[in-house]
Structure formats: structure tokens, C-alpha cells
Amino acid sequence: MHPPAMWIQAPEHPVPVRRLRIDDRTTPRRLTLRVIAATPRYTVPASLLVVAHMIGEALVPVLMGLAIDRAVATGDAAQLVLWLVLLALDFAMLSFTYRFGSRIGLLGEQAVQHRLRMLVAGTLLHPAGVEGEAKRPGVALSLATSDVDRLARASLLAIYPVSEVAAVLFGGVVLLGISWPLGVAVLVGAPLVLWLTELFGRPLNRRSAEEQAAAAAAAGRAADLLDGYRVIRGIGAEAEAAERYRRASRRALDGTLRARRSEGMFVGSMDLVTGLFVTAVALAAGLSAFSGDLSVGGFITVVGLTSFLLEPMQNVASYTGTLWAAATASAGRLLELLRSGEAEAEREGRSEDESDDTSETDAHRAAADDVPLRVDGLRVGSLAGLSFEVGAGELVCVALEGAAADELVEVLGARRPPVAGSIRVDGDVVAEPGAGCPDRAGLHPAMLVAPHAPELFAGTVRENVMLDGVSPAAAAAALTAAGCDELAETLSEGHDTVVGERGGSLSGGQRQRIALARALARRSPVLVLHDPTTAVDAVTEAGIARRLRELRAGSRTVVVTRSPALLAVADRVVAPRETPGQAAPRTAPRGGGPNDGEPR
Image: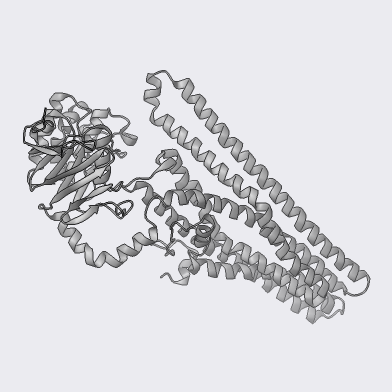
């Protein structure tokens, strides 16, 4: 908890934010409402301060009208001084409350934005991956930046629109005391304006969603173009790629223009409606003054108050409508991403409830070398009835390639559930059918699954391998085993050579060796590799296979591959059947090929 003094500046630690519960019943509207209510510790005091500011502004014409009736009209100097002092205090109050109310509110909005961005980033970066368009880097970037920003700004709806509604209600009550018909008109007209806001804002909501989708598609196209530029240039397809990007960019521009036109029509129509309403109230006040029903001070109060009410009513109608439309549109896009994983609230709730019970156990498992791995009757995709165990110190090769290999690695990596069978690590079930996607809170702490096409980080070769928890000795041994010592001889600065963004300055074989070294450096009790040497030459592959076996001695290693060099150093080779109706999987002893022991 932060003391009130911390409301006006960013605290040292992240601001507490309510859990954003996301499930199959969560709609964009519900998610937006949960975002609005996510930081009550900041939005409530901010709202009260800004309400005080708006009431202070509404008091200005009231105090001026009273000063005219009680001081100017009577010539009472003491009354004049009194009302001038009250007016000065009112200005001081409304200035103070707006300044600090806005600062507190924006701090809460930034806290919600940070929480949403961490939730989105955690889903995008989770080993289980994501589905759909969010896989594309440009789309992911748009979701994590533009959509998160638009949704987080919805928290401001608990501050400024509330204060504007409070100002309208206060003005209506004051007008009731001066002229009840005028007060009734304001109190009845304000809800009518809000209803019109919801009605006219629906097309804007739809256009905002289309705008964000088109912008994300253009960003994704640009990211794909840059990522594959070498290939595009190699086949001479620069003109076609550029034309496709221009079309995507044009669609994004057209979507933005449609959204801006819709927003302009919405804001203009709302300004017209509120302007006509306030003008009618002012005209009625003028007629009352001419008929003698209002004093001069009362007339000034009514005219000043109705002129003031024009701005909050227009803001409630236009600003609130556009902000709500943009937030719900972005909430819909973010829900498509966040529903692909487990809800953040469930992940956090489970981790809080189980942290005390599992932390010591997980640490023990991560440190233990004797962690059994058992695959029993696994069926997924084209694989049927795959069963094998990995004993202590064994290196087992599963002779698969193509789609079947991808499917097996996805199940081992908790990226999809099997159709039948199970996978157990240290006695714990890490994959089984009927539970949807396996536990997205993380893989088993003793197991590491390295993908076939990993990503490198910006930095040096050494920095990509020596991550948190990896000792210099472990990193050096892994670099040697993966053949990176020979690689270092060809690089300008050896292991301290900068690899570029996503390893763009290296060849495919160089990137593959660094990724293999990174996986080996973790020293996981159970390590799963998928074709780790496909981009290197045969001599280099043979050396890597030999050193891989030596480095992993005493630990369990599974290699999904049909590489002869890796099969030759395996203790056992599992040759699964890939279609139903064939013989059950058989295993061959060390040195055997994938067909050894199978009928020929």
C-alpha cells in the first residue's frame, strides 16, 4: 500500500491493480468495465477531486450572480469584499483539485496499462504460444501497444465523465432553486443526451474495430516483409512484396479515414444537440428575466451556468462516446488473444495458493539429475500409440520428421494436448487428453523443450547463451559442445560478436548452433531437442553429436530426429508408427537406425 503522498508521483514498485478476470463469458463490454474498476485506490480519489473541480467551476456564475444581487445592486462594500474573497477561494480550490485529481487519475491509468501490457506480453511470450493473427510480429506489436493503450484509457471514464455528470446535476439543482422549469429541463435533458450518445456511438464502435484490425494487418505485413527480405530479394520479388504492402497500407488508411469521418459526424451531431439544448435553456432564462420572474443576478447566474454546462454536456456526449467505442473495440481484439491462454486471474490465484507448497519441491526437481520421463500410449495427429521411457543418463532418439515430429514436440512442450495417452515427468502428468491445453503456467521445472526454429536475442553470442541461472563454466561447456568454438574463429569478435536483431547477421547454421548451446547450458534434468543440427555440414554434425552425448551424460535427453549422426550416438532409437494399423513402436539399441528391429 502506498501512502497518499505517493498519489502524485510514480511509486518505486508497480501500483496494485485488481485482477482482470477473463473467461469464455467475458465480453468486450465486461472487460472494459473491469478495466475501469481495476484501480479504485486511484480512480476514486481522482474522481472526487475532479468532481470538486467541476462543482467549483459551476459555482463561479452562482457566486457572481449572488455578488451582483447582494453587493452591486445594494452598494454594500462589505458584501462585495465577502463575495470576492469567496470567488478567489473557489478559483484556488478548483485549480488545486483539477491538478492533483488529474495526476492521480493518470497514475492509475498508467498502472492499468502496465498490467494489461504485462498480461499481453506474458501470453505472447509463453512457451505454449498463441494462435491466429497474433503470431505475426506486427499484429502482436499492435495488440501490445495501440490496443492496450486504448483499453487502458477507459479507466479515465471513471473520472472525467463522472465529474461532468456531477456538474450537470449540480447545475440542474441550482437552476431548480432559481426557476424550477429550467432545472427540470436540465435534469431531464442530460439523460436524454447520454442515451443519444449510446445510440449514435454504435457505428463509431464498429469503425474503430475495423480501423485497429486494418492497422494491425499492415503492421504484420511490414514485419513479414522485413523478416523475409533476404528471401524476397533472392527470388526477385521485391516489386510484388512492395505492392502487397502498399495494398495493406491503403486498407489501413481507408479504415482510419472511415473511423475519423464517423468520429467527426458523431462529435458534430452531439455538439449540435447539446448546443441547441443549452441555447433553448438560455433563451427561456432570458424570457423569464424580461417578464420579471428573474432578478439581474439570477439571470446572470442562469446564463453563466447554462454556458458552463455546454462543455460538460458536450464532453459527456462526444469524449465519452469516442473513448468507450475505441476501448470496447480494442477489448474485443485483446480478448481473442487472451482467451488462447489461461486467464491471468486463475494463473495468479493458483500461484499464490500453491507457491508455499511447491517452491521447495520445484527447486528440488530442477536440481535433481534423476528425473524420469515416461511417454505412454501417446496419440496425436499422425502418431498412434507412441510409448517409451528415458532412463537415467540415456540419450534416446525418436525417429520422426516433418509434421509428425512437429506434433510430438508440441505435445512435449505443452503447446497442445494429446488425443490419447499421457506424458509423465517425475511422476507428474504434464500432458493428457480431455483438459484442453496443458498447464500454461509453465512447463515442468525439470524439463526443457528446445524448438527446431528458436529465436536469438539481440546481443552477443555469449549473452545469448549465458542467461540468468547459467554459470560461465556451463556456458563455456555448452558453446564447445554445440560447435560454437569453431564458429567463434570465423566471427570478428569471437563469442563477443553481436548477432543482430533475431540473429539477423548470422547464417542459419550459426544461429542453430548458438540456440543449441543455449539449451545445453541450462543443464536441465530432462532435455528435448528437435532436429538441432539440420543446418550444419556432416562433419560438424558428427562432432556436435559426440560432444552432445558427453555433455549430457547422467541426464535424460530426447532428440526428435532422423539424422544418422545423432542416431549413431543414441542409447536407443524409437521408431514410431505414424498411421494407425501398423505395428507398435519398437526400439533399437545404440547405433541402430530408425528401422532396426522393424520388419523390412
